[in-house]
Image 1: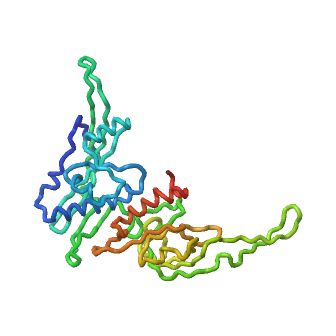
Image 2 (image 1 turned 45 degrees about the vertical axis):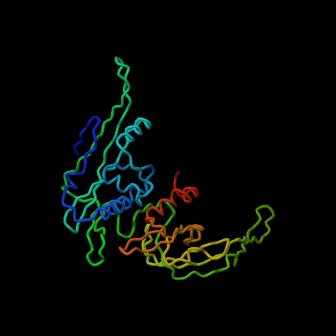
Image 3 (image 1 turned 180 degrees about the vertical axis):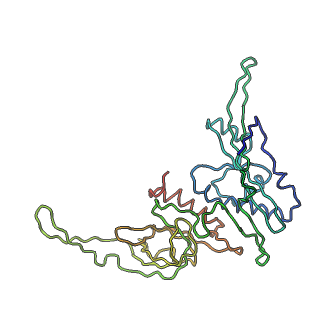
Length: 319
């Protein structure tokens, strides 16, 4: 891979890729850019901000429903950020390529920005020096990052390939984290007495007496059975799953929705799954077959919000 070092380089425009007769409306193309960015699971689930080049398309989509993990910065803002952080800033360059009237690729490039302040001692002038390093493609020929193909029957653009998704069923796996997230459809939710058979015999280590110890759970207990529609985090290799849920205020809120992202963990000692208390996200399927939150959030964004918030507070993820 070759690298070009250019001082005070203005980032390349995408005219060589985008200067074709465009068979797609600008609003549709913008939506493909947004969907492509929101489909970069590897970026959304990693820590830190992700910076996007504020080119023509960046300006058009920055106010749309793009994940808040992204920041759109100008060249000057990137230079100032590099100086402030005293390190190289990586910025993502998003381009598209029209392969055919029904096929459009969205591709991602990377530009590294390194900047520092300079002083011209003879004239007493201060100025900024910036270096933009651009990575070129490899030697395996052209391979699209995310390819969209128009579905004539549904009149919508479908993702036909996405090299950033591990499989079609599992977006990401990290078995070191005891958490499973999936879109589920309710089969049954039945209440049970969590304090039934709560007596346990123990022997006092000092007196040798046998004691009866009782434990009480102050929540309502439920046994839930759900169909797994789609895995979101960690792959549960079954079509249906049963788990326990506890709610201090009544019945669990997640049972009120037809489709919902559920967050569960596994108790190795008792060998059963249990619901992460009060944590769920109602979702619905759109006309083009994708899943969204009730306010239009992507599935990935809903998971990111839980990851950064309550699940970091509960110690499942590092801060």
